[in-house]
Amino acid sequence: MREPYSDLVGRGRVHRRFYTDPAVFEEERARIFRRVWLWLGHESQVRRPGDFFTTRLAGERVIVARHTDGAIHAFHNRCTHRGAEVCPASAGNARNFVCPYHAWTYRTDGALASVPLEQGYGEDFKRRMDALRLEPVARIASYRGFIFGSHAAQGEDLPAYLGPEVRAAFDNLVDRAPEGEIELAGGRTVQRYRGNWKLQLENSIDLLHPRILHRSAIDAADRVDHGGQPPSIEWDIVKANSLTLREWDGMQIAAMQGGHCWMAGFLTKAIDENPLQKRYRRMMVERYGEERAGEILAFNRHNTIVYPNLFVNSRVAQIRVLQPVSVDCTEQHGYIFRLKGAPEEMFEASVRMVNTNNSPSSIVTSDDHEIFERIQESLRSGRYEWVDLSRGLENEDAAQGTNELPMRNQHRAWAQYMA
Amino acid sequence: MSGAELWHRVQQFLFHEARLLDERRLQEWLGLYAQDAEYWVPYAWGQKSPKDHVSLYYETKSLLGMRVDRLERELSPLDSPPSRVNHYLTNVQVDDGDPLTARAHLLFVEYRREEQRWFAGRATWRLRPNGAGFLIAAKRVDLLNADQDGGHLRFALPF
Image (tube, rainbow over all chains, first blue to last red; front, side, top):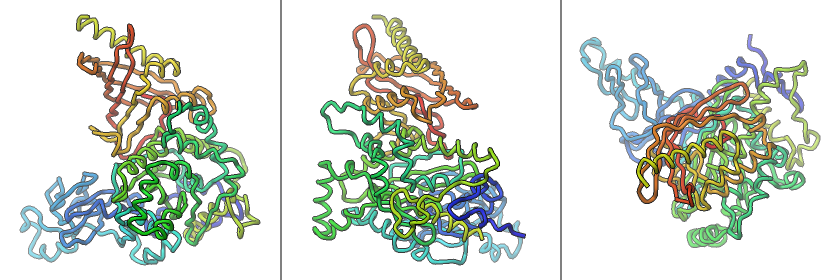
Protein backbone atom coordinates (compact mmCIF):
# COMPACT_ATOMS: atom_id res chain seq x y z
CA MET A 1 0.00 0.00 0.00
CA ARG A 2 1.23 3.49 -0.83
CA GLU A 3 1.92 5.63 2.15
CA PRO A 4 -0.14 8.84 2.22
CA TYR A 5 2.85 11.16 2.22
CA SER A 6 0.54 14.14 2.09
CA ASP A 7 0.10 13.68 5.86
CA LEU A 8 3.62 15.06 6.24
CA VAL A 9 2.24 18.50 5.38
CA GLY A 10 0.10 19.78 8.23
CA ARG A 11 -1.59 23.05 8.97
CA GLY A 12 1.22 25.60 9.29
CA ARG A 13 3.81 22.91 9.79
CA VAL A 14 5.58 20.05 8.01
CA HIS A 15 6.92 16.80 9.39
CA ARG A 16 10.71 16.48 9.54
CA ARG A 17 10.62 13.38 7.29
CA PHE A 18 9.60 15.82 4.54
CA TYR A 19 13.27 16.86 4.49
CA THR A 20 15.11 13.80 5.78
CA ASP A 21 13.50 10.53 4.63
CA PRO A 22 15.19 8.88 1.60
CA ALA A 23 11.93 7.04 0.82
CA VAL A 24 10.14 10.39 0.58
CA PHE A 25 12.84 11.59 -1.82
CA GLU A 26 12.35 8.56 -4.08
CA GLU A 27 8.60 9.19 -4.15
CA GLU A 28 9.19 12.87 -4.98
CA ARG A 29 11.23 11.77 -7.99
CA ALA A 30 8.38 9.57 -9.16
CA ARG A 31 5.35 11.68 -8.26
CA ILE A 32 6.65 15.23 -8.71
CA PHE A 33 9.83 15.45 -10.78
CA ARG A 34 8.84 12.75 -13.27
CA ARG A 35 5.39 14.22 -13.69
CA VAL A 36 5.85 17.98 -14.09
CA TRP A 37 7.49 20.16 -16.72
CA LEU A 38 11.14 20.84 -15.86
CA TRP A 39 13.42 23.40 -17.47
CA LEU A 40 15.96 21.86 -19.85
CA GLY A 41 17.66 24.82 -21.46
CA HIS A 42 17.24 27.65 -23.93
CA GLU A 43 16.79 27.59 -27.68
CA SER A 44 19.88 29.79 -28.11
CA GLN A 45 21.94 26.77 -27.00
CA VAL A 46 20.81 24.88 -30.11
CA ARG A 47 20.69 27.64 -32.67
CA ARG A 48 21.86 25.68 -35.74
CA PRO A 49 20.99 22.18 -36.95
CA GLY A 50 23.29 19.70 -35.21
CA ASP A 51 23.77 21.92 -32.14
CA PHE A 52 23.25 19.97 -28.93
CA PHE A 53 23.74 20.13 -25.17
CA THR A 54 23.49 17.52 -22.44
CA THR A 55 21.76 18.04 -19.10
CA ARG A 56 19.72 16.22 -16.47
CA LEU A 57 15.96 15.86 -16.36
CA ALA A 58 14.72 14.65 -12.97
CA GLY A 59 18.16 13.13 -12.40
CA GLU A 60 18.28 11.34 -15.77
CA ARG A 61 20.88 12.20 -18.37
CA VAL A 62 19.44 13.62 -21.55
CA ILE A 63 20.62 15.15 -24.83
CA VAL A 64 18.80 18.13 -26.33
CA ALA A 65 19.56 18.62 -30.04
CA ARG A 66 18.32 20.54 -33.06
CA HIS A 67 17.79 18.24 -36.01
CA THR A 68 18.41 19.03 -39.68
CA ASP A 69 14.70 19.80 -40.13
CA GLY A 70 14.95 22.54 -37.49
CA ALA A 71 12.96 20.72 -34.79
CA ILE A 72 14.35 20.39 -31.26
CA HIS A 73 14.49 16.87 -29.82
CA ALA A 74 15.32 15.53 -26.37
CA PHE A 75 16.33 11.94 -25.70
CA HIS A 76 18.07 9.83 -23.12
CA ASN A 77 21.86 9.79 -23.30
CA ARG A 78 21.99 6.00 -23.34
CA CYS A 79 22.83 3.76 -26.28
CA THR A 80 19.98 1.35 -27.01
CA HIS A 81 22.59 -1.32 -27.76
CA ARG A 82 24.49 -1.92 -24.51
CA GLY A 83 23.64 1.14 -22.51
CA ALA A 84 26.79 3.27 -22.83
CA GLU A 85 26.61 7.05 -22.72
CA VAL A 86 26.30 8.15 -26.33
CA CYS A 87 27.41 11.76 -25.93
CA PRO A 88 30.06 12.68 -23.33
CA ALA A 89 30.31 16.36 -24.30
CA SER A 90 28.35 19.06 -22.46
CA ALA A 91 27.61 20.92 -25.70
CA GLY A 92 28.67 21.09 -29.34
CA ASN A 93 27.61 20.49 -32.91
CA ALA A 94 27.32 17.01 -34.38
CA ARG A 95 26.08 15.33 -37.55
CA ASN A 96 25.54 12.10 -35.65
CA PHE A 97 25.93 10.71 -32.17
CA VAL A 98 28.24 7.71 -32.38
CA CYS A 99 28.42 5.37 -29.41
CA PRO A 100 32.12 4.91 -28.54
CA TYR A 101 31.61 1.23 -27.59
CA HIS A 102 30.37 -0.42 -30.84
CA ALA A 103 29.68 2.59 -33.07
CA TRP A 104 25.91 2.43 -33.12
CA THR A 105 25.20 5.71 -34.82
CA TYR A 106 22.21 7.99 -34.22
CA ARG A 107 20.95 11.05 -36.04
CA THR A 108 20.27 14.30 -34.19
CA ASP A 109 16.57 13.39 -33.99
CA GLY A 110 17.55 10.21 -32.14
CA ALA A 111 16.90 7.81 -35.03
CA LEU A 112 19.30 4.87 -35.30
CA ALA A 113 21.10 5.41 -38.62
CA SER A 114 23.59 2.60 -38.78
CA VAL A 115 25.34 -0.17 -36.89
CA PRO A 116 28.53 -2.02 -37.89
CA LEU A 117 28.16 -5.38 -39.69
CA GLU A 118 24.43 -4.88 -39.80
CA GLN A 119 23.77 -8.27 -41.42
CA GLY A 120 24.89 -9.93 -38.15
CA TYR A 121 21.71 -8.70 -36.44
CA GLY A 122 19.45 -10.74 -38.67
CA GLU A 123 17.13 -10.29 -41.60
CA ASP A 124 14.54 -8.06 -39.96
CA PHE A 125 16.98 -5.59 -38.39
CA LYS A 126 16.03 -2.76 -40.77
CA ARG A 127 12.50 -2.99 -39.35
CA ARG A 128 13.68 -3.22 -35.73
CA MET A 129 15.89 -0.17 -36.11
CA ASP A 130 12.98 2.19 -35.70
CA ALA A 131 12.29 0.88 -32.19
CA LEU A 132 15.99 1.14 -31.36
CA ARG A 133 16.10 4.92 -31.65
CA LEU A 134 17.46 6.84 -28.63
CA GLU A 135 14.59 6.86 -26.15
CA PRO A 136 12.82 10.19 -26.49
CA VAL A 137 11.90 12.32 -23.48
CA ALA A 138 8.13 11.85 -23.23
CA ARG A 139 7.27 15.49 -23.89
CA ILE A 140 9.20 18.58 -24.85
CA ALA A 141 7.91 22.12 -25.35
CA SER A 142 9.20 25.69 -25.45
CA TYR A 143 7.84 28.90 -24.03
CA ARG A 144 9.43 32.11 -25.40
CA GLY A 145 12.59 30.13 -26.19
CA PHE A 146 12.81 28.36 -22.81
CA ILE A 147 12.83 24.60 -23.41
CA PHE A 148 11.05 22.33 -20.95
CA GLY A 149 10.79 18.57 -20.85
CA SER A 150 8.58 16.11 -19.00
CA HIS A 151 8.95 12.38 -18.37
CA ALA A 152 5.15 12.14 -18.31
CA ALA A 153 3.44 11.48 -21.64
CA GLN A 154 0.19 12.96 -20.35
CA GLY A 155 -0.64 16.09 -18.42
CA GLU A 156 -1.23 19.80 -18.68
CA ASP A 157 0.42 21.56 -21.59
CA LEU A 158 3.36 23.83 -20.76
CA PRO A 159 1.58 27.24 -20.85
CA ALA A 160 -1.15 25.93 -18.55
CA TYR A 161 1.42 24.40 -16.21
CA LEU A 162 3.27 27.69 -15.91
CA GLY A 163 0.19 29.85 -15.57
CA PRO A 164 -0.07 33.57 -16.42
CA GLU A 165 2.06 34.92 -13.56
CA VAL A 166 5.01 32.67 -14.35
CA ARG A 167 4.68 33.24 -18.08
CA ALA A 168 4.88 36.97 -17.34
CA ALA A 169 8.35 36.45 -15.81
CA PHE A 170 9.62 34.72 -18.97
CA ASP A 171 7.90 37.32 -21.16
CA ASN A 172 9.56 40.11 -19.25
CA LEU A 173 13.01 38.53 -19.41
CA VAL A 174 12.77 38.35 -23.20
CA ASP A 175 11.05 41.74 -23.59
CA ARG A 176 13.92 43.41 -21.75
CA ALA A 177 16.14 42.76 -24.76
CA PRO A 178 16.04 45.78 -27.08
CA GLU A 179 16.10 43.34 -30.03
CA GLY A 180 13.45 41.12 -28.43
CA GLU A 181 15.81 38.17 -28.24
CA ILE A 182 18.04 36.69 -25.55
CA GLU A 183 20.82 34.12 -25.50
CA LEU A 184 22.12 31.92 -22.75
CA ALA A 185 25.82 32.70 -22.35
CA GLY A 186 28.71 32.94 -19.91
CA GLY A 187 28.76 29.39 -18.55
CA ARG A 188 27.09 28.41 -15.32
CA THR A 189 27.83 28.23 -11.63
CA VAL A 190 27.15 25.11 -9.59
CA GLN A 191 26.78 25.34 -5.83
CA ARG A 192 26.40 22.08 -3.99
CA TYR A 193 25.04 21.73 -0.48
CA ARG A 194 24.31 18.76 1.73
CA GLY A 195 20.72 19.50 2.42
CA ASN A 196 17.27 18.84 1.03
CA TRP A 197 16.21 20.67 -2.15
CA LYS A 198 13.10 22.14 -0.51
CA LEU A 199 15.26 24.13 1.95
CA GLN A 200 16.50 26.27 -0.96
CA LEU A 201 13.01 26.51 -2.40
CA GLU A 202 11.73 27.92 0.90
CA ASN A 203 14.75 30.13 1.47
CA SER A 204 14.39 31.95 -1.85
CA ILE A 205 11.03 33.35 -0.79
CA ASP A 206 11.92 33.73 2.92
CA LEU A 207 12.01 37.47 3.57
CA LEU A 208 12.56 37.20 7.30
CA HIS A 209 16.06 35.74 7.02
CA PRO A 210 18.23 38.12 4.92
CA ARG A 211 18.72 40.83 7.48
CA ILE A 212 19.42 38.24 10.18
CA LEU A 213 21.39 35.45 8.53
CA HIS A 214 23.35 37.67 6.15
CA ARG A 215 24.29 40.10 8.91
CA SER A 216 28.02 39.46 8.66
CA ALA A 217 28.03 40.19 4.92
CA ILE A 218 25.85 43.29 5.36
CA ASP A 219 28.09 44.61 8.14
CA ALA A 220 31.17 44.04 6.02
CA ALA A 221 29.51 45.93 3.16
CA ASP A 222 28.65 48.78 5.52
CA ARG A 223 32.28 49.17 6.52
CA VAL A 224 33.62 49.41 2.96
CA ASP A 225 35.24 52.76 2.19
CA HIS A 226 34.59 53.44 -1.48
CA GLY A 227 37.09 56.30 -1.49
CA GLY A 228 34.75 58.55 -3.47
CA GLN A 229 34.33 55.96 -6.24
CA PRO A 230 30.88 54.64 -7.20
CA PRO A 231 30.22 51.32 -5.45
CA SER A 232 30.60 48.12 -7.44
CA ILE A 233 27.62 46.02 -8.46
CA GLU A 234 28.96 43.23 -6.26
CA TRP A 235 28.86 45.52 -3.25
CA ASP A 236 25.36 46.69 -4.15
CA ILE A 237 24.03 43.15 -4.23
CA VAL A 238 25.42 42.29 -0.82
CA LYS A 239 24.20 45.58 0.59
CA ALA A 240 20.70 45.01 -0.83
CA ASN A 241 20.09 42.43 1.90
CA SER A 242 20.26 45.15 4.53
CA LEU A 243 16.64 46.31 4.36
CA THR A 244 15.15 46.52 7.84
CA LEU A 245 12.84 43.75 8.99
CA ARG A 246 9.96 46.18 8.64
CA GLU A 247 10.95 46.97 5.05
CA TRP A 248 11.19 43.26 4.21
CA ASP A 249 7.81 42.80 5.81
CA GLY A 250 6.29 45.40 3.50
CA MET A 251 7.48 43.65 0.34
CA GLN A 252 4.91 42.39 -2.11
CA ILE A 253 4.68 38.61 -2.51
CA ALA A 254 2.34 36.35 -4.43
CA ALA A 255 1.48 32.65 -4.24
CA MET A 256 -0.03 30.99 -7.29
CA GLN A 257 -1.68 27.76 -8.25
CA GLY A 258 0.71 24.83 -8.70
CA GLY A 259 3.07 25.96 -5.93
CA HIS A 260 4.58 28.82 -7.93
CA CYS A 261 5.23 32.21 -6.30
CA TRP A 262 7.08 35.49 -6.70
CA MET A 263 8.44 38.34 -4.64
CA ALA A 264 8.96 41.99 -5.53
CA GLY A 265 12.41 43.29 -6.42
CA PHE A 266 14.71 44.89 -3.90
CA LEU A 267 17.80 45.64 -6.00
CA THR A 268 16.56 49.12 -6.99
CA LYS A 269 19.80 50.86 -6.23
CA ALA A 270 22.00 48.48 -8.17
CA ILE A 271 19.67 48.48 -11.10
CA ASP A 272 18.30 51.94 -11.68
CA GLU A 273 20.73 54.57 -10.60
CA ASN A 274 23.75 54.15 -12.81
CA PRO A 275 24.60 55.71 -16.19
CA LEU A 276 24.61 52.32 -17.90
CA GLN A 277 20.97 51.78 -16.95
CA LYS A 278 20.05 55.20 -18.26
CA ARG A 279 21.72 54.41 -21.58
CA TYR A 280 19.89 51.07 -21.71
CA ARG A 281 16.58 52.75 -20.90
CA ARG A 282 17.02 55.10 -23.87
CA MET A 283 17.63 52.10 -26.15
CA MET A 284 14.45 50.47 -24.85
CA VAL A 285 12.43 53.62 -25.47
CA GLU A 286 13.81 53.84 -29.03
CA ARG A 287 12.79 50.27 -29.66
CA TYR A 288 9.43 50.02 -27.87
CA GLY A 289 8.29 53.62 -27.39
CA GLU A 290 8.04 55.42 -24.05
CA GLU A 291 4.90 53.73 -22.79
CA ARG A 292 5.73 50.10 -23.58
CA ALA A 293 9.38 50.49 -22.51
CA GLY A 294 8.18 51.98 -19.23
CA GLU A 295 5.86 49.03 -18.73
CA ILE A 296 8.57 46.46 -19.39
CA LEU A 297 11.10 48.14 -17.11
CA ALA A 298 8.56 48.68 -14.33
CA PHE A 299 8.08 44.93 -13.98
CA ASN A 300 9.75 44.71 -10.62
CA ARG A 301 10.14 41.18 -9.36
CA HIS A 302 13.09 39.49 -7.76
CA ASN A 303 12.45 35.74 -7.84
CA THR A 304 9.65 34.14 -9.70
CA ILE A 305 9.80 30.58 -8.40
CA VAL A 306 8.49 27.93 -10.74
CA TYR A 307 7.58 24.85 -8.76
CA PRO A 308 9.43 22.60 -8.13
CA ASN A 309 12.93 23.78 -9.02
CA LEU A 310 13.34 26.94 -11.11
CA PHE A 311 14.02 30.55 -10.10
CA VAL A 312 13.57 33.24 -12.74
CA ASN A 313 15.07 36.69 -12.13
CA SER A 314 13.75 38.60 -15.14
CA ARG A 315 15.14 41.90 -14.05
CA VAL A 316 18.74 40.77 -13.97
CA ALA A 317 18.42 38.19 -16.78
CA GLN A 318 19.32 35.20 -14.66
CA ILE A 319 17.82 31.87 -13.78
CA ARG A 320 18.76 29.24 -11.27
CA VAL A 321 17.70 25.63 -11.26
CA LEU A 322 17.83 23.04 -8.50
CA GLN A 323 19.04 19.55 -9.34
CA PRO A 324 18.24 17.37 -6.32
CA VAL A 325 20.90 14.64 -6.01
CA SER A 326 19.61 12.79 -2.94
CA VAL A 327 17.43 13.53 0.08
CA ASP A 328 20.34 15.40 1.66
CA CYS A 329 22.30 16.72 -1.32
CA THR A 330 21.31 19.37 -3.86
CA GLU A 331 22.98 21.29 -6.66
CA GLN A 332 21.97 24.82 -7.55
CA HIS A 333 22.92 25.87 -11.09
CA GLY A 334 23.06 29.56 -12.03
CA TYR A 335 22.70 30.76 -15.65
CA ILE A 336 22.87 34.17 -17.31
CA PHE A 337 21.27 35.58 -20.44
CA ARG A 338 22.62 38.20 -22.80
CA LEU A 339 19.94 40.69 -23.83
CA LYS A 340 20.43 41.22 -27.55
CA GLY A 341 20.86 44.86 -28.43
CA ALA A 342 21.64 45.90 -24.85
CA PRO A 343 25.06 47.31 -23.88
CA GLU A 344 27.58 44.49 -23.34
CA GLU A 345 28.38 45.99 -19.92
CA MET A 346 24.94 44.84 -18.76
CA PHE A 347 25.87 41.26 -19.53
CA GLU A 348 29.18 41.77 -17.71
CA ALA A 349 27.28 43.11 -14.72
CA SER A 350 25.06 40.01 -14.76
CA VAL A 351 28.16 37.83 -14.80
CA ARG A 352 29.48 39.66 -11.75
CA MET A 353 26.14 39.35 -9.97
CA VAL A 354 26.11 35.60 -10.49
CA ASN A 355 29.72 35.38 -9.28
CA THR A 356 28.69 37.26 -6.16
CA ASN A 357 25.49 35.41 -5.38
CA ASN A 358 25.86 31.97 -6.89
CA SER A 359 29.51 31.01 -6.96
CA PRO A 360 30.60 28.59 -4.23
CA SER A 361 32.65 31.55 -2.97
CA SER A 362 29.57 33.76 -2.43
CA ILE A 363 29.64 35.57 0.89
CA VAL A 364 25.83 35.62 0.85
CA THR A 365 24.46 32.25 -0.27
CA SER A 366 27.28 30.32 1.43
CA ASP A 367 25.62 31.23 4.71
CA ASP A 368 22.27 29.93 3.45
CA HIS A 369 23.84 26.64 2.46
CA GLU A 370 25.65 26.37 5.77
CA ILE A 371 22.31 26.75 7.52
CA PHE A 372 20.65 24.14 5.28
CA GLU A 373 23.32 21.64 6.25
CA ARG A 374 22.84 22.36 9.93
CA ILE A 375 19.08 21.93 9.56
CA GLN A 376 19.62 18.64 7.76
CA GLU A 377 21.81 17.40 10.63
CA SER A 378 19.79 18.79 13.53
CA LEU A 379 16.37 17.63 12.35
CA ARG A 380 17.31 14.10 13.43
CA SER A 381 17.58 15.19 17.06
CA GLY A 382 14.80 15.26 19.61
CA ARG A 383 11.33 13.85 19.77
CA TYR A 384 9.61 16.92 18.34
CA GLU A 385 8.80 15.94 14.78
CA TRP A 386 7.61 19.17 13.17
CA VAL A 387 9.02 22.22 11.43
CA ASP A 388 7.01 25.40 11.88
CA LEU A 389 5.75 27.38 8.90
CA SER A 390 2.81 29.09 10.57
CA ARG A 391 3.84 32.72 10.16
CA GLY A 392 0.89 34.63 8.71
CA LEU A 393 -1.37 31.56 8.59
CA GLU A 394 -4.36 33.59 9.81
CA ASN A 395 -3.73 36.36 7.31
CA GLU A 396 -3.22 34.63 3.99
CA ASP A 397 -5.64 36.79 2.04
CA ALA A 398 -3.56 39.88 2.70
CA ALA A 399 -0.20 38.14 2.73
CA GLN A 400 2.90 40.23 2.23
CA GLY A 401 6.54 40.37 3.24
CA THR A 402 7.48 37.82 5.85
CA ASN A 403 4.22 35.89 5.65
CA GLU A 404 5.17 32.26 5.03
CA LEU A 405 2.25 31.74 2.65
CA PRO A 406 4.46 31.11 -0.42
CA MET A 407 6.26 28.27 1.41
CA ARG A 408 2.98 26.76 2.57
CA ASN A 409 1.75 27.14 -0.99
CA GLN A 410 4.78 25.16 -2.23
CA HIS A 411 4.13 22.44 0.30
CA ARG A 412 0.41 22.29 -0.47
CA ALA A 413 1.32 21.64 -4.10
CA TRP A 414 3.73 18.97 -2.83
CA ALA A 415 0.94 17.33 -0.82
CA GLN A 416 -1.32 17.25 -3.87
CA TYR A 417 1.34 15.60 -6.02
CA MET A 418 2.22 13.14 -3.26
CA ALA A 419 -1.36 12.23 -2.28
CA MET B 1 70.30 40.63 -9.17
CA SER B 2 71.08 37.10 -10.42
CA GLY B 3 68.32 34.84 -11.68
CA ALA B 4 68.87 32.51 -8.72
CA GLU B 5 68.57 35.37 -6.25
CA LEU B 6 65.39 36.69 -7.86
CA TRP B 7 63.92 33.19 -7.90
CA HIS B 8 64.77 32.81 -4.22
CA ARG B 9 63.25 36.16 -3.27
CA VAL B 10 60.05 35.55 -5.24
CA GLN B 11 59.66 32.08 -3.80
CA GLN B 12 60.13 33.40 -0.27
CA PHE B 13 57.49 36.05 -1.01
CA LEU B 14 55.01 33.42 -2.24
CA PHE B 15 55.68 31.27 0.82
CA HIS B 16 55.06 34.35 2.94
CA GLU B 17 51.67 34.92 1.26
CA ALA B 18 50.76 31.27 1.85
CA ARG B 19 51.78 31.51 5.47
CA LEU B 20 49.68 34.63 6.10
CA LEU B 21 46.63 32.78 4.75
CA ASP B 22 47.43 29.64 6.73
CA GLU B 23 47.87 31.63 9.94
CA ARG B 24 44.77 33.68 9.24
CA ARG B 25 46.64 36.96 9.24
CA LEU B 26 44.17 38.15 6.68
CA GLN B 27 44.67 41.92 6.91
CA GLU B 28 48.40 41.40 6.45
CA TRP B 29 47.62 39.10 3.53
CA LEU B 30 45.49 41.80 1.95
CA GLY B 31 48.37 44.21 2.44
CA LEU B 32 50.41 42.20 -0.08
CA TYR B 33 47.98 43.22 -2.83
CA ALA B 34 48.26 46.40 -4.91
CA GLN B 35 45.33 48.84 -4.79
CA ASP B 36 44.34 47.87 -8.34
CA ALA B 37 44.94 44.14 -7.85
CA GLU B 38 42.76 41.38 -9.28
CA TYR B 39 42.19 38.03 -7.59
CA TRP B 40 40.79 35.52 -10.07
CA VAL B 41 39.80 31.87 -9.84
CA PRO B 42 38.27 31.00 -13.24
CA TYR B 43 35.35 28.63 -13.59
CA ALA B 44 36.29 27.26 -17.01
CA TRP B 45 39.55 25.47 -17.80
CA GLY B 46 41.71 27.84 -19.83
CA GLN B 47 39.19 30.66 -19.36
CA LYS B 48 40.21 33.68 -21.44
CA SER B 49 38.37 36.45 -19.65
CA PRO B 50 36.51 37.08 -16.37
CA LYS B 51 34.16 39.51 -18.13
CA ASP B 52 32.08 37.27 -20.38
CA HIS B 53 32.07 34.06 -18.33
CA VAL B 54 31.32 33.27 -14.69
CA SER B 55 34.22 32.82 -12.25
CA LEU B 56 34.65 31.08 -8.91
CA TYR B 57 36.23 34.30 -7.67
CA TYR B 58 36.81 37.52 -9.55
CA GLU B 59 37.50 40.20 -7.00
CA THR B 60 39.06 43.60 -6.63
CA LYS B 61 41.01 44.50 -3.53
CA SER B 62 37.90 46.21 -2.17
CA LEU B 63 35.84 43.01 -2.51
CA LEU B 64 38.62 40.92 -1.01
CA GLY B 65 38.64 43.42 1.84
CA MET B 66 34.93 42.87 2.43
CA ARG B 67 35.50 39.11 2.46
CA VAL B 68 38.40 39.40 4.91
CA ASP B 69 36.53 41.82 7.14
CA ARG B 70 33.64 39.36 7.38
CA LEU B 71 35.93 36.42 8.16
CA GLU B 72 37.67 38.38 10.89
CA ARG B 73 34.49 39.30 12.76
CA GLU B 74 33.45 35.67 13.11
CA LEU B 75 29.76 36.45 12.77
CA SER B 76 29.35 34.26 9.73
CA PRO B 77 27.94 30.77 10.20
CA LEU B 78 30.03 29.78 7.20
CA ASP B 79 33.20 30.24 9.16
CA SER B 80 32.25 29.16 12.67
CA PRO B 81 34.09 27.11 13.60
CA PRO B 82 36.84 28.59 11.44
CA SER B 83 38.45 26.49 8.71
CA ARG B 84 42.05 25.44 9.10
CA VAL B 85 43.98 25.52 5.84
CA ASN B 86 47.41 24.73 4.44
CA HIS B 87 48.65 26.15 1.16
CA TYR B 88 51.42 24.03 -0.38
CA LEU B 89 53.40 25.56 -3.25
CA THR B 90 55.71 23.54 -5.53
CA ASN B 91 57.22 23.81 -9.04
CA VAL B 92 57.85 27.52 -8.56
CA GLN B 93 59.09 29.28 -11.70
CA VAL B 94 59.83 32.95 -12.20
CA ASP B 95 59.70 34.83 -15.49
CA ASP B 96 61.74 37.99 -15.12
CA GLY B 97 59.82 39.87 -17.78
CA ASP B 98 57.54 42.86 -17.67
CA PRO B 99 55.47 42.22 -15.72
CA LEU B 100 57.38 39.97 -13.39
CA THR B 101 55.48 36.68 -13.35
CA ALA B 102 55.62 33.71 -11.00
CA ARG B 103 54.00 30.31 -11.43
CA ALA B 104 53.52 27.46 -9.02
CA HIS B 105 51.49 24.36 -8.45
CA LEU B 106 49.17 24.79 -5.51
CA LEU B 107 47.75 22.24 -3.13
CA PHE B 108 45.12 23.62 -0.78
CA VAL B 109 44.02 21.47 2.15
CA GLU B 110 41.17 22.56 4.39
CA TYR B 111 39.77 21.05 7.55
CA ARG B 112 36.43 22.07 8.97
CA ARG B 113 33.54 20.41 10.81
CA GLU B 114 34.70 16.81 10.70
CA GLU B 115 35.87 16.97 7.13
CA GLN B 116 39.16 17.46 5.34
CA ARG B 117 39.12 18.36 1.65
CA TRP B 118 41.71 19.43 -0.84
CA PHE B 119 42.05 21.25 -4.14
CA ALA B 120 44.92 21.12 -6.62
CA GLY B 121 45.60 23.98 -8.98
CA ARG B 122 48.06 26.09 -10.91
CA ALA B 123 48.68 29.56 -9.61
CA THR B 124 50.06 32.56 -11.48
CA TRP B 125 51.07 35.86 -9.93
CA ARG B 126 51.92 39.16 -11.57
CA LEU B 127 54.24 40.95 -9.20
CA ARG B 128 55.44 44.53 -8.86
CA PRO B 129 58.69 45.39 -7.12
CA ASN B 130 57.89 47.26 -3.91
CA GLY B 131 60.92 48.45 -1.95
CA ALA B 132 62.82 45.36 -0.97
CA GLY B 133 59.80 43.14 -1.63
CA PHE B 134 56.86 42.83 -4.00
CA LEU B 135 53.20 43.71 -4.38
CA ILE B 136 50.74 41.32 -6.02
CA ALA B 137 49.14 43.02 -9.03
CA ALA B 138 47.19 39.91 -10.01
CA LYS B 139 46.77 36.35 -8.80
CA ARG B 140 45.08 33.65 -10.81
CA VAL B 141 44.40 30.13 -9.59
CA ASP B 142 43.20 27.48 -12.05
CA LEU B 143 41.76 24.58 -10.09
CA LEU B 144 42.00 21.22 -11.84
CA ASN B 145 38.35 20.57 -10.99
CA ALA B 146 37.05 24.14 -11.28
CA ASP B 147 34.25 23.17 -13.65
CA GLN B 148 33.38 19.75 -12.29
CA ASP B 149 29.80 18.80 -13.08
CA GLY B 150 28.64 18.36 -9.52
CA GLY B 151 29.84 21.80 -8.46
CA HIS B 152 31.52 22.62 -5.16
CA LEU B 153 30.54 22.96 -1.56
CA ARG B 154 31.03 26.55 -0.41
CA PHE B 155 34.50 28.09 -0.10
CA ALA B 156 35.53 30.22 2.86
CA LEU B 157 39.24 31.07 2.70
CA PRO B 158 40.94 32.21 -0.53
CA PHE B 159 43.13 29.78 -2.47
